[in-house]
Length: 430
Image 1 (cartoon, rainbow, N blue to C red):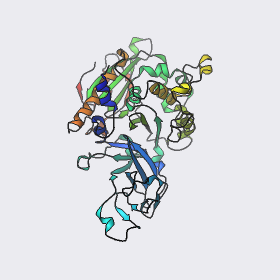
Image 2: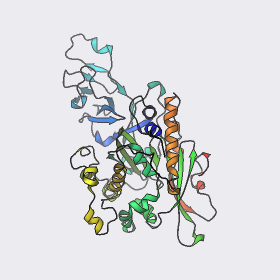
Image 3: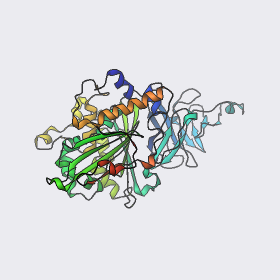
Image 4: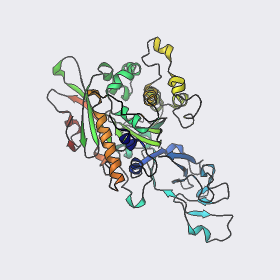
């Protein structure tokens, strides 16, 4: 369990908070590249870490991220016109380039006026189908990471996100909790047997054993944890080991080996839950594989909109929330559906949000199934405290090319760590 002080330490992400300071030291995904589909397309309002920004793609296809509010009189640049190399505020026509350079101030006759200042702009990179931004001090910007899917073309990538109305740690906890998969996802896991999707094949075995043996170890980049399940009743058949890697403050590599997560706070009580699947052989970013994958896990646009997990619907009256019992279908539950919720994504979102906007961890009772959670709390607290002290936070200089999520069969007597031998362990399994 955590004290209120330590819970606030890892959950609060506003400007000036320890965890907020830590997050601002990392390159973070802010939106999908596809949300700015063409040069001079409509700008997008972006909220991250309790702050408001505007993203736009200029006439040359370059993406910029500026403070949302015009530095003249604070009108929203999300209302602006993207044209002729910049974004123009509709209030007085001031126009800004992606780097904040002031291009025009049509209501000021002095041509030198615009050279005296710049709009506040942030470093932006595009990679892996995502727009990444660095929000911290310019002098402390780390090298841009090299996550394993960055080398693939858009045809071989499937990036998507859900908007979850609770603190990011609650969503993150579900990703380092293997035992819930067998229980919470009872209904969708039953459908994996007949599916040809790689995701279904890699998770089908989990429906048979909720009491996996869990171990976790601290590593140079954060921690990794394993869930081990017997392959059969024959003890000589070995076990299936699934290893997830967690890099503070918000990155996780799934044991399937082809799935990346980032939990990026919009605020203390709202999270962008990024997923990126990749496949060097299959064109999962194209139809029909794209839709099949998203529909199978409940991340297709129709499912997100129906449940209030998209930006367009997360504040809508129909969005899943406590008042409507998170849209649970009780008649379906009485007919045999375990949760009465549509799919993996909606089940995870419901239980995460049901604990409240920021979960009180002073009351939790952890078990042997929750071994990874104290590691997560410790990693996040370390990350926040180091940033608050002006040091580089845990995970900042992780070698992202050498971190894996992986699963595989272990023969009797083999150690699970051999599946991720490239991870440098600094504290052994607990």
